[in-house]
Structure formats: C-alpha cells, structure tokens
Image 1 (tube, rainbow, N blue to C red):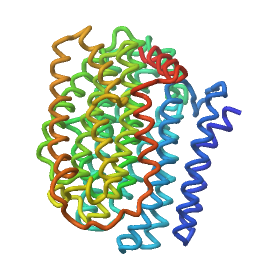
Image 2 (cartoon, helix red, strand yellow; image 1 turned 90 degrees about the horizontal axis):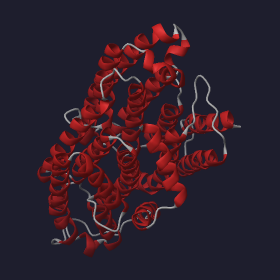
Image 3 (cartoon, one colour; image 1 turned 30 degrees about the vertical axis):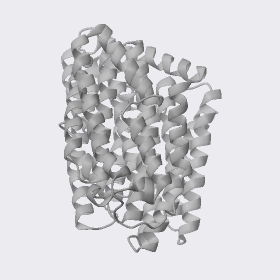
Image 4 (cartoon, helix red, strand yellow; image 1 turned 45 degrees about the vertical axis):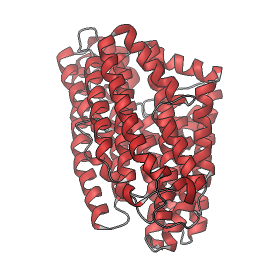
Length: 479
C-alpha cells in the first residue's frame, strides 16, 4: 500500500497535467486543478497511517513526510487562490485560453516534479526532479510574454541551470566516492545505501562534493550571493507561482541539501557541513535585510524577505542539534504558510490597484480593508512578532544559538531587527498612507489567505503534540 500511495502522489499530478493541457474551458480546468491538488494532499495525509517501505527509487521516512505534507497542502490552497486570480487575468486580457491550458498543465507538472524530488530514494532521480521543477517554473515565470517577464525567465533559466549543473557535478562526485565501498551500478545512487556506507567513503571527495552541492542547491534555495534570479522571478511571474516558489520550491532544494548533509555527518573524517551552512545563512540574512530598504516593487520586496528567512532556516540547520533542527523545521513550515498567504494578498492587491509599485499603493486598510488587514497580519507574522508561529521558531533559533555561540546570536538578531524595520517602513505607507490608485472592490478568494494565517497563529499559541513529536523525530534524524 505504501508504494501505491507514493505512486499516487506522482500519478495524480502527472495525469492531471496531461488532461489540463487539452481542456479548453477555464472554469473546468481551474476546478480540475483544485481537485487534483486536493486529491494529492489527501493522499499524502495517508502517510500518517502507513508504514513507510523504501525501494530503490522511492523513499518515505520522517524527514520527507514533513516536506510532502507541507508541499501538497500549500499546493492545494494555492490552486484555490489561483482560480480567482487567473480569472481576473483573463478578464483584463493578460492571459489567453491557450496560455491558460499551458499554465494549469505546468502547475500540475510542477507539483509532480516537487513530489518526485521529495520521495526519490535515488540521488540522480532527485536531481532530475529538481531540474524538471526548475524548467517548469522558468516557463511559468515568462507566461505573460512581456519584456520584463521574459527577461526574468531567461535570468532564472541561466542562473538556475548553472546551479543545477554544480549540483550535478556534486552528485557525480558522491557516486565516485561511493563506488569503492558499494560498487558500480544503481546502488551507488540509492540514498539509503549511501548513508549506510558513508563512513567508508573517501572524505576528500565527499568534501569537494558537498561544496558543489551547497553552491548548486543553494542557488535554488536562494542563498546570497546566489540569489539573483529570485527577486525577478517573484516580481514578474504570476502571483500563484510566486507563492509556490517562495513557499515550496525553495524548501525542495533545501531538502536535497539536507539529505547530503546527513550523509556527510556519518563520515567522521569529512568536512563538517555546519559552518558552511551557518556562514551562507548569516550572509543571506544580513544582505536581504539591508536590501529590503531599497525595494520599490512590493512583490520584489517580499522576495528578499524569502531570502532572509531561508537564510535563517539554513543557519539553524547548520547549527544542528535537536533544538536548532526542531526550530529550523518549525520556521520552514511557518515561513511557507505565511509567505504564501502574503503573496495571496499581494496578488489581489496588485490586481485591484493595477500596479506592484509601492509608491502607487496606499491606504489599503481604507480602500480594501480585508486585503489590507490580511496583508498586515501576514507582515506582523513574517517579521516574527508574537503571537504568531514565526516568533516561536525564531525564539528557539536564537535561544539554541545563544547557548552555543553567543557572538553569532548578535549577528542573527541584528539581521532580524533590520529586516523588521525595512518591512514596516515600506508596508506602513501601503497600509495606512494616503489612499492611492484604484478603489475597486477585490474579487478575491480570501479563504486560503486566512487559513494559512490562522494556522500560523495557532502554531504560535499551541503546537499539537503529534506535530511536536514528529518534528522531534526529524530533528534527531538530522543530527
């Protein structure tokens, strides 16, 4: 049954993608997109009651279970948001029926690729899945066919290809390091086999491999200074894709990196991956926090916020240990839910106002109070103020760091405070300034945004024991 369930979360989106590519009507396609995403999410929930069984190609364990359920849930809520968002894009003529078929098909193809990357037990197959997800999102970023959108897609393609090529070279080096211990053939690519024999691998090859993997998958995570594709892709692509990019695809690349980190931890002579991850994480936090003060585009501003938070998550995983790993997992989940909710609000705000420029948006709490206050709640959550879940995760990250490396805590907290100031400086004008732009009511689906914000609020007040136990198990697994 496990293999059937694992196969289903791959089969549902792939078959749906084929159907959506030929369906002519928008409403029917949007409904099928939602139903497919819901079916995939419900299938992933069955993993709670199914004993995982690994094969040579597919794997289910405590680590990827967290990522799969988060990915399929946000994939479903984003598909609901997408229905009302894309309908408006049709009405104003930004998208044609042909582009819509392409959009919905690519959405399900992206879900297939992300799910495949998360359940792949073969490191080569995982790399292929991340590459497919990259190419799919490149096509979706450029779907508007404007000069800016095509430029952003091309930039994403070039930088993403460089990153994924570095990750491929790192994957090949891991295979070469494993060959003397496990022999040639498929076993040299199976993660469960590799982690069992990693202590026997050549540490020099493993060291070089991890550097390439960190740079390669770090490009996809959006870590500075490898982040240049991310702000453009978020700003120019459809907002549902911005939500998926920020809330999900960055996590998938991080997951791949964590798998190799676990492998290196088994080899006592290999380089410690922690300091490298801590360094890149801190650089990302400080850089992104400072860049928030110079943003003029609201979607681009929140893209830099994603870089900051991925930096915090990578920093925490780099610190390691049960508490830091637990905090990183919690922060990852809270960031995915919060940032996607923010993009839901921003997408409809941009449609109402007809612009993404911060200077041309003002007085949202007056002109569009539901969207305005929804965005405000999202910003309060994302900067780490109580009682939202990100406050809890950041508090745990800072606490665990202070106990082990107080001087790193100073840098981390400084970055978080700078980012808080930058976001409130920009968002304050948008929320409470003089009303600007169009004042038409928003024809938006508010349910996904408030479901996400409600879950983040609940996590800040009460974490269900089953969630705590699951995260604790994963934290121990990560070492």
